[in-house]
Image (cartoon, rainbow, N blue to C red; front, side):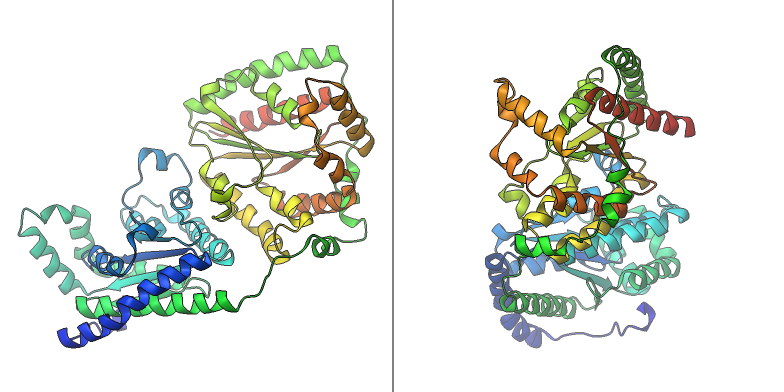
Length: 500
């Protein structure tokens, strides 16, 4: 592909001015329309060293309102970024609805420069490409406009630009040893770029290759590309009707048979119990182990992600409290997940969870998780059928990114029966210190028990994976539930430490 490009393409000064006089105001208008329609935009610039990424970004933003965009220069990972999955730093730099993010180099660095420098090992490439495509697919399905621009120049032109930069003290710093090495082995690096373009040129996020030897030609073509794509997306948004599925519509999506329910939740033996004495004895032993293991996690830089879901009054809070009681508070955080706020609603639904993922050696516990999308949001009609159906794969992909980066990921479903829930609700109402835990909404949700049960069973089947399993915790006896959670976490950590 790249060796077949006509890099002699150019624009004269007069023709360039004429084209830009039309394109600049058009792009400014499209930015305003994207803002008004709540369309988020990501523009990623890739290409060879000295191909003009910085220059072209500078030209592009001249037409844009600076209050509506942000530019990110993507270089080597910081220490903080190295302690997370490699896509974490891009999830945290995602634009909100109506805003534009521009990337000088992007998430493709891992399969390009890092690959060339052998920071990315050959056996890591498949997972890296999978993560990249999953990232782009998830965002585009959620309404993100992803514009990918590759600036192409030849070896001779690149060397000439490097020599010019090196000739001045004011610009010599812009040329690294890596740049010169990639110029020397231009053919090898071009093969890597060819592979990247081929493997990630998708319908939802296609590549736009720009002949960049002539800067004026490159600028005009980039403007034309961005303007055309944004114009199409603006028109699509204007044509789009309503689109939110109603709660009633979601109800009808749930299966009427008991196939899923009988296969998972129906197997939970809710008669399992421990006496108070057994509970105390086991709790003391397990909490001491957890205290020691927590220190080992930090020493060996292993991140842990624990997600808790379950019925209202299912015992999530009590299990989390006993789990963390002897842990060092500097090494863990518990995130209680509530309804998304306005800022969170302006992003992809997984964004707020990516932001809170632990760095290496730390533990993050989510009291309610990203699975709200396929439970409460599905049943109450807060998302469309298309959105919750694709969420199963999106959540599996996110968890694989975490485990590929070395994280232990465990998900707990706290299972109780309907009678036990009613008993706990009444006990909370009668206890002044616990009345805050019960709301009218909790009682209303009981009326939808069967709908939630079917949704939960489908969720457990479709998202319990070897790398991030669901553990159904029999919770009618709080003592039993708390011990099972602790035993599961301790066992998972011990197994991981034994592998190292």
